[in-house]
Image 1 (tube, rainbow, N blue to C red):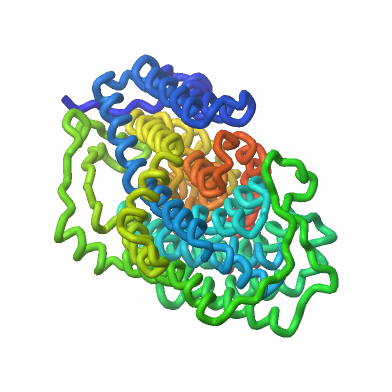
Image 2 (image 1 turned 45 degrees about the vertical axis):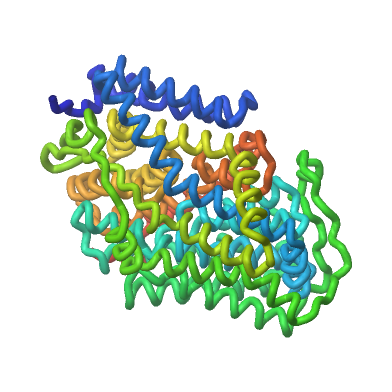
Length: 553
């Protein structure tokens, strides 16, 4: 029996919207203010989502529970699989001592913490976002930063802030390609539109990142390096998105930015070297930040040995992200399992879609093509190069699994919560509340994308969720359709830093367990402030000359 979603079950949008918001509020309050452990907060949020779905929105209980199960297994693979294996590689490198050599080599480029942050969190993280996405950049960069001696809050929070501007073109353009494919946008036009919004924030975010870390005065001390970093990322981001396509935007921009910054640092260094490992104003954040040690020089052979596992990781992640490779691996082994009792039994209804549309629920066990599998193979190959024997590799893997067990549980519960809200229609109720804002819709429509990513943890999922609604609302209000489709993705990227699964990935990578609430409280202001700035920028593109000249009709 098909169940049709109802977005205003009480005939009063205020009541319906309030009820739809309860699961997210429960989880965020438990996590951010009541200091409840993340997996318990996620579990309570999931219970609230199930109760609202069944008793307020009329979703059959069996269907709601199957949606939760579907979301939970999706959380474990691919996202949890990425987290487990990147921490596995990190553990191998730390036990071997090669991670310390890697840290020394990065310190050799610059001892300044602010510049290390630009190089690793922004440039290196953007490359991994472009190649893989789905939590990989935060896991890698937060792990490296904690190894360099950054405090846990700094390593976690700043990795999340840095992983914003590249997200719309992450995983070889997957969010944009999905937006165009699912909702009928012209791929090149909506890609170009995003490429006329995000470069302004690609220039802003590096300044914002250093300001958040060290304060305004310390930021101004290194403004030339920040400007080089931002411009060398923003310009390729604009050019590639407008004249080539979405697939290689982040990878090309990240490589150009990384090379430009390293070359610039060969001829310029700040007068005052910033050595604080903690966030300004958060010197006592509960972690064990290390003071910088004197630079240790290593032989060429030692440096090559230390960097080899990470070079292998980069190559594997890039290769695993190629659509042709994914297709080939899925052809070898990728069984699909329609979720009985849920698949094609939920119908989305107008005005979210033009006509009633069935929601599929097919779990594809793409174990071979999963990014986490590429990371696992790179870790095993790296371990052999580091002269681990097979028994040591297996022991380290299972120690890592035990180390991250609660993080994996949390990710599964978070995805279960998000999937229940999706299939019950409660997240759509929140979106419709934004869609009723009339003239202010460009601003609030952008925040709709932010809400979508904050709830689902994915710009791709947010585009699937709200891309159609953006198209319908823009048409009704006489706004350019591509503008609002792009705004959903561009606004969504600022929600990436507060989505629960990203926060869990960051806390796991830094091994700052049970401090997810501290991380959430720190990044929340930055997330909402940047999302509002994107909303204001989109509003100017909609109504204010000369910004209107940027709009792809």
